[in-house]
Image (cartoon, rainbow, N blue to C red; front, top):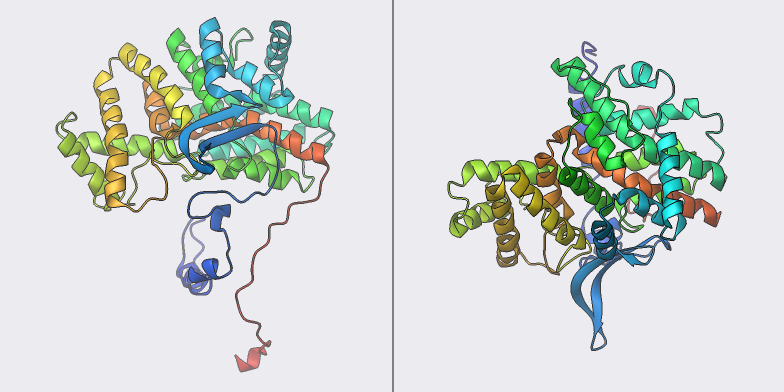
Amino acid sequence: MNTNSYSEITPEIEKLSNLCKETATINPALYSEYDVKRGLRDLSGKGVLVGLTEISDVCSTKLENGEMVPADGNLYYRGYNVKDIVRGIEETSHFGFEESTYLLLFGKLPTKEELQEFVELLSYYRTLPTSFVRDIIMKAPSRDMMNTLARSVLTLYSYDDRADDISLPNVLRQCLQLISLFPLLSVYGYQAYKHYHDGASLYIHPPKPEYSTAENILHILRPDSKFSELEAKLLDTALILHMEHGGGNNSTFTTHLVSSSGTDTYSAIAASLGSLKGPKHGGANIKVVQMFEDLKATVKDWTDETEVGNYLRDLLNKKAFDRAGLIYGMGHAVYSLSDPRAVIFHSFVERLSREKGREKEFALYTLVERLAPQIIAQERKIYKGVSPNVDFYSGFAYSMLNLPLELYTPIFAIARISGWSAHRLEELSYNGKIMRPAYKYVNTHNDYIPMTDR
């Protein structure tokens, strides 16, 4: 066997891979025959109940004449509408990620004094172990920041004298530390990679205790540490909108599933990071940005509805961009008429586009937002409405903030660690049984064949 390269796919591996493909194909008709909800959802997108939660609620329907019909989407954190949370934060002109994290973890909106104490606690925990950056983050930096983040999280286990203690006070302490450290682990990992692989200058800015999470991200990322108030407020809003989305999304369900086994916090969060890394989950906004870059290069007149519409049809017919047949950023597993996160984000993105002089690009996004649902309805059989999801605008927003593509999904993780933490604490507080989803065996039973007779 040729072993010259660690990453090489040898002919032997190709052969075995083909064998996997031959033996691992399930007849799609069997899912209907046995009423199996592939992905835990039916064709209409309705989820199969697998648990209970008090942390957040995703609403996309309303009762009308005794029937549930599609409605504008709403997202609730501990019973509070996210629209009201963001509006309240904007009216008082303060940063809201920390306040919303307090709400998710403890089930109540904090008083001014409680919030100040909580912010100071997060600031206290925003310190990495001695030499962690040098010994861990700087060593063998990965080109994928989600892998770097997961490795850092798992390594923190070795620095924790109570790593396996899953009592609620200890898990809360661990979660608060991870919430505080995720921005450092993500950005420092990116800086190390750019330095060692791309030859960029290496700078490690320490966080500022007086800064919010959003402010610190921009501070430690940018060489000059400078940012505008609107930039920080938009990033803060993005963190709020991404921090939680019900117990049924892939990464949060992973948190529940893995936590139910009784494993440690670092292993549970690393598993959730692995889920979020997937392009069908946390990496979707990258695809939106790349799709729009192709659109801008292909379409000559960004204001021509016919030309833009033809490009969107080509996307659906696998003739444009990555030929996957998708308009990225459109549609959601639950929401139909509207994704409340996209609705909230729209106004912030519009304001920043004016500050950055990128109004023409914003107008193009708005045009696609209007045309895409119409074209999808014409080209595809759909079971519910289609509207922009939060990924549709978040990638554009991050590009205006000059965030590198490598950090798009880690920013999602920096936000979602708050929700994961709340769900881990909720799962452990049940002290219930380990989750064991059922799979239907559809192969045959065979008699063992001796080696000489094969």
